[in-house]
Each structure stands twice: as C-alpha cells, then as structure tokens.
Length: 391
Image (cartoon, rainbow, N blue to C red; front, side):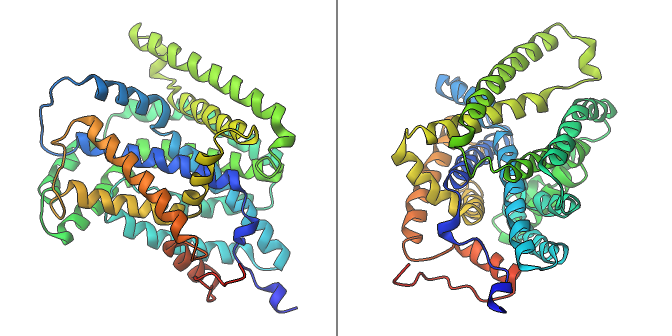
C-alpha cells in the first residue's frame, strides 16, 4: 500500500506520443525565433538585400513567431491536468506538491535566463501556481475562463500600448557593453538584466503575454479533461473542423489587420487583435499536425520528433547554451554579422542534431538530464536514469 501511494512521474510507455511530437514542433519554432533574434541584436550592421532572408522572415512571422510559446502553453496546461489526476489518485496534497515543482522550475528558469533573456520557463513557473486555482475545474469551466481572457485581451493590449511609458530599447542600450564581453559573468549579468527589462517590468509582456499564456494553459487543461489528445481518432471530425475554421480565421485576421493598419482605422487604438491572429494560426498548425499524425502520414518525421519532445526541457536549455557559444564573444562571436538566413539555418541544424542525440540518449536512459534532475527534486525521491535491460 505504501508503494502505491508514492507519486511518480508518468512512465515512458504511458506518454501520449502526439503531445511529445507537438512539443518538438514547438521547440523548432523556439529555436528559430531565438536564433534569428540575434540578427537584430547589438551594434548596427548593414546587410546586402537578400531574397532568401526576406522569404524566411515572412515564414518566421506567419508560422513560428509567438506560435511556439502559445503551443507550449497549451501543452503545459495539458501536462498540469495529467499531473493533478496522478496526485489525486495517490491521495496527496496537489497544492504542496505542485508548488514545490514550480519552485524548482523557477530555479531552472533562473539558470536558463543567464544564457538567454527571452526565457519562458519562469512564466510557466509563475502561471503554474495560478493554475492551481483550477485544479478541480471541469473542462467547461476552464474553457469558458480561457474564452473570457481571450475576449478581453485585445482591449488590454491596446490600453497598454497607449500608455507608451516604457522604452525597452533604451534600457537594453545600457547593458550593451556587457553583450560584447568575453567574460562569462558579464554575459550572465547581461542576460539576467535583459530578462528583467524585457519581460519582468515591460507591461506588454508582463501583462498581455502572460494573459495569453494562461488562456492557452486553460485550453490545454480543458483538452485533457475531455481526453482530446488521448483519443484523437475519436475527435477526428472536430479536429478537421478546428483546422479549417482556425485557418480561415487566421487568414481573415491577417488580411483584416493589414487593411486596418493601412487605412489607419481608429479601432486599432482601442482593439489590437494580434493575439487572436497568433492563437488561430497556432491552432491551425496544431490541429494540422494532429490530423497528419492520425492519418498515418510522415511517420518517419513524427518518429524523430517524439524523441525530441521527450527531452523538451533539456533540449530547450541546450539550444540557448549553444546560441551563446555561437553568437557571443565567450564563443565564436558571430553576433549580428551574418545574413538573416544564416541564423535560421543554424536553428534548423541545431534542432536536427538534437533529434539524433535525443534518440540515441533515450536508447540508454529514461529521461533527459534536466528532466531527471527536475523530477527528482519535485518528487523527492531517486529515479533511475539508466534503463534496465528488460525495458
């Protein structure tokens, strides 16, 4: 009886494959977004006109930018619901356990923020605690709350934009000398300060982005409560409908926003639909991937992605360390000297190498190294890292 009451992580064989695939896809977007950001950071560098880069900028803008962290937020909410079910079955205190888990995630976020000032782990740690309010909620309640947040978000974003009382660029210029330092300590300090300026005290991020994240988490929570990812085939009709409706909405919102901006509509001063566009695009991509998966398409691709997704935390943090070594003076010092396409290519190459490394790693080990440490700290028990021969 004592053994059955011990809370343990979801076993590898019990994981939902499509969730790991979606996590991996989101990581590709994160890598591309983070790496191409280096193209615009630092002292001004003039680049010759480049059609390939122009096309890749559009691809990133419409298919990856902000769609990855919103998708990861949905999957975070899904994982939270799974964990709450697991804890409830063991008769443990969910608030105490999850608070401890989020504390250690925040510690990992602090470490990651020392390598990249666009960290999202700290946001998940903070919002994860807020999710505890909903741990007993029904799918309907979570969905409705998410809907309310999404409905008011364009008005909140417009209001915060109208205040115009925070200049992130000005603050970042103060720490630019640290950006070019050859000293690791300077780089850590620069990134931690950048995190503070960009995401902690910047109203657009601290309020608008986090409302969007939390709304997406609630969507993921609701999806788990109805068994959406667990029984995709049973939801195929709804999945196809979601794909076409969200795709159509994304196109209409993109075109409508362009027209509104060009015509200088007064409405945009009070209502900014950008987050709706991001959400609809993300949902169309997510449902499209799910549709392809249950249709039996791209099996080799999905097989590789699931290995990447099982090591999401390790791979995410590793991407940032590699970027630091590639682009800053503690490494190769490339900074923003290369054309845009170079940074996108580096992201794809790093991502592809991580798929191979992840597959090889999981042949011998149960968890990624960061996942292993985090889970042991969260569960307060030793978990075997190396696989047994009969696994």
